[in-house]
Image 1 (cartoon, rainbow, N blue to C red):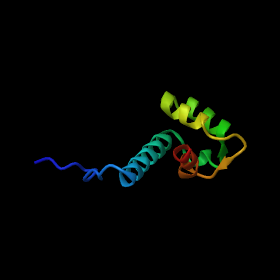
Image 2: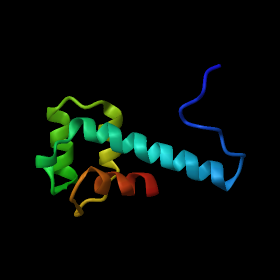
Image 3: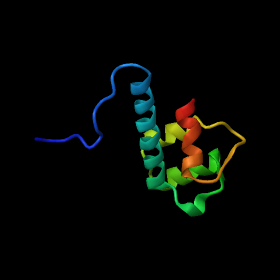
Image 4: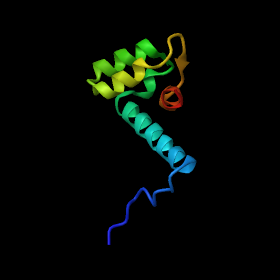
Amino acid sequence: MVVDPGGPVPPPGEERERARSFAEAEATRLELSRHLERSTFPADRQTLLETLESHHAPDSALQAVRRLPEGETYDNVTDAARPLVAG
Protein backbone atom coordinates (compact mmCIF):
# COMPACT_ATOMS: atom_id res chain seq x y z
CA MET A 1 0.00 0.00 0.00
CA VAL A 2 1.27 3.49 -0.92
CA VAL A 3 0.39 6.39 1.37
CA ASP A 4 0.22 9.89 -0.06
CA PRO A 5 2.54 12.10 2.03
CA GLY A 6 0.18 15.01 1.44
CA GLY A 7 -2.52 13.26 3.42
CA PRO A 8 -6.15 12.80 2.47
CA VAL A 9 -7.80 15.20 0.05
CA PRO A 10 -10.37 17.43 1.74
CA PRO A 11 -13.90 17.34 0.35
CA PRO A 12 -14.78 19.90 -2.33
CA GLY A 13 -15.43 23.37 -1.03
CA GLU A 14 -13.79 25.98 1.12
CA GLU A 15 -11.53 23.58 3.01
CA ARG A 16 -10.12 22.14 -0.21
CA GLU A 17 -9.49 25.64 -1.59
CA ARG A 18 -7.64 26.60 1.61
CA ALA A 19 -5.52 23.47 1.33
CA ARG A 20 -4.78 24.22 -2.32
CA SER A 21 -3.85 27.84 -1.52
CA PHE A 22 -1.55 26.69 1.27
CA ALA A 23 0.15 24.19 -1.06
CA GLU A 24 0.62 26.86 -3.74
CA ALA A 25 2.01 29.31 -1.18
CA GLU A 26 4.48 26.75 0.08
CA ALA A 27 5.56 25.78 -3.45
CA THR A 28 6.14 29.45 -4.33
CA ARG A 29 8.09 30.07 -1.14
CA LEU A 30 10.25 26.99 -1.67
CA GLU A 31 10.99 27.88 -5.31
CA LEU A 32 12.05 31.39 -4.33
CA SER A 33 14.14 30.14 -1.42
CA ARG A 34 16.10 27.88 -3.77
CA HIS A 35 17.41 30.95 -5.60
CA LEU A 36 17.44 33.74 -3.00
CA GLU A 37 19.99 33.90 -0.21
CA ARG A 38 19.48 35.49 3.20
CA SER A 39 22.01 38.16 2.25
CA THR A 40 19.62 39.30 -0.52
CA PHE A 41 17.24 40.72 2.07
CA PRO A 42 15.85 43.23 2.75
CA ALA A 43 15.04 43.64 -0.92
CA ASP A 44 12.58 45.27 -3.26
CA ARG A 45 11.05 43.70 -6.35
CA GLN A 46 13.85 44.85 -8.66
CA THR A 47 16.56 43.44 -6.38
CA LEU A 48 14.73 40.12 -6.17
CA LEU A 49 14.41 39.96 -9.96
CA GLU A 50 18.09 40.77 -10.49
CA THR A 51 19.12 38.12 -7.96
CA LEU A 52 16.85 35.49 -9.50
CA GLU A 53 18.17 36.28 -12.97
CA SER A 54 21.79 36.07 -11.81
CA HIS A 55 21.04 32.67 -10.26
CA HIS A 56 19.36 31.45 -13.47
CA ALA A 57 16.05 30.90 -11.70
CA PRO A 58 13.22 29.38 -13.75
CA ASP A 59 10.75 31.61 -15.56
CA SER A 60 8.01 30.65 -13.11
CA ALA A 61 9.96 32.26 -10.24
CA LEU A 62 10.69 35.37 -12.30
CA GLN A 63 7.05 35.68 -13.34
CA ALA A 64 5.93 35.33 -9.73
CA VAL A 65 8.24 38.11 -8.52
CA ARG A 66 7.16 40.37 -11.40
CA ARG A 67 3.68 40.26 -9.85
CA LEU A 68 4.97 41.85 -6.63
CA PRO A 69 3.97 45.48 -6.15
CA GLU A 70 6.62 48.11 -6.78
CA GLY A 71 7.81 50.20 -3.86
CA GLU A 72 7.55 47.43 -1.26
CA THR A 73 10.51 46.00 0.66
CA TYR A 74 10.59 42.38 1.77
CA ASP A 75 12.51 41.15 4.81
CA ASN A 76 12.72 37.47 3.81
CA VAL A 77 11.43 34.86 1.36
CA THR A 78 8.23 34.25 3.30
CA ASP A 79 7.52 37.98 3.34
CA ALA A 80 8.03 38.13 -0.45
CA ALA A 81 5.92 35.04 -1.16
CA ARG A 82 2.93 36.13 0.95
CA PRO A 83 1.47 38.72 -1.51
CA LEU A 84 2.02 36.36 -4.44
CA VAL A 85 -0.41 33.88 -3.02
CA ALA A 86 -2.85 36.35 -1.53
CA GLY A 87 -3.26 38.17 -4.85
